[in-house]
Length: 391
Image 1 (cartoon, rainbow, N blue to C red):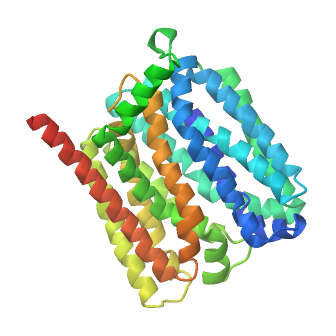
Image 2: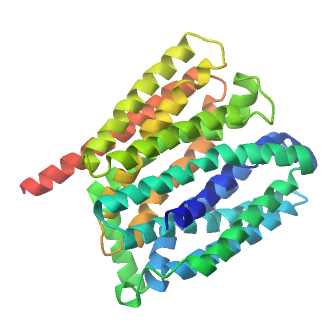
Image 3: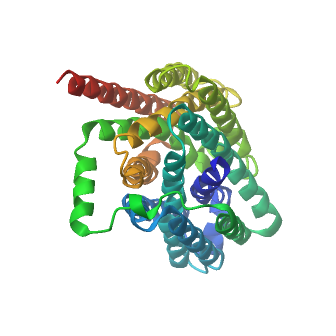
């Protein structure tokens, strides 16, 4: 279950990061500007974010398995559209199809884990999912860089289609239905509207969602800025994206291992605070290195794996605490939780990153600010719990 859930979640990461090394060549091949190719990220992230609120609710009604199979099939088709693109408009269309479908695996996979596992076991499985999932940011740009060198940029999207097709076959063969008909909720407009209103007015859930989004965006800031950060600030080539992503993934793997080991030994709330303590130290280190104008390599990368480890320590506990706000509608809760993060990704890629690309100091300050935002929201969520209990 952990391997399948992680693989489904990795599709979204591969769709973001695999083709980053090909931006310059794609702009020439498609007769587009670099800015237009950059906006293909937005063409993916916007439909990804807009569809996230619906995937979980639909899976609550029709079951988890059907949604996963549909998502893999649509992602495969969208990847082939991108591979055959002859203009920027066709690329945008294929990216939009990928965005519509990639979120299904992210949301429904997490809901499936929570359907099957409880308590400490659920926290441990979530940590295992994060550990496997952590390979994606490192593998994706490295694979993309070498595919670009060997067979051209179109092979990157053929590769994505093959990965999705393999997942489709694996899910068809081995993924059971984890939500029996007796526990499903019909897609009645009134009932669905009540569910969304309840979710959007649940202060603790909203605060936990923002707490998760803040710490994730601290790392995604560097992922979205990778083409400029690697080439301009680090002075590396298109096949060198691993210098950025591999340290980050090493930190994520370490954080996942720590999270798995401490599950059941300390409370979820304390594990979140532990992760924030690690991220706070990383943020201070990053600001110090960039303001002192240390040489780019390796100093510019020192804080990133530490921050990534702290971020990952918070993830299983934040997910469980948020999904447990709505134990009867975990699909809907999973949609809302992931929507908050991905809508933040969209805003970061479209609006925030372009303002930060000229300065590593700005990037370091923004990463630290996003972590503090996440900590503030988590403290607010916990305070809300205490207030409700006292009443």
